[in-house]
Length: 67
Image (cartoon, rainbow, N blue to C red; front, side, top):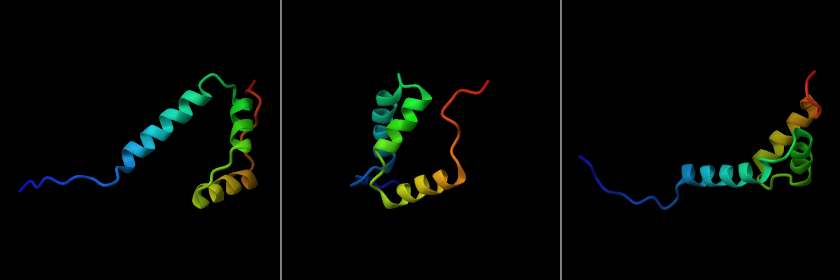
């Protein structure tokens, strides 16, 4: 009962590719630099933008390291 189908869109591959690009870009950044980068590059997706705004209202984690 196996039928061969070709995916027109692979969401998992898209997510992994995007994560790889972002991870490579921020790998050498400090937490503060990452936060600045995120603020300077807000998401264009309305759902992600809403989540960013909600996180900002709740108070994000401090940019400085814990002591």
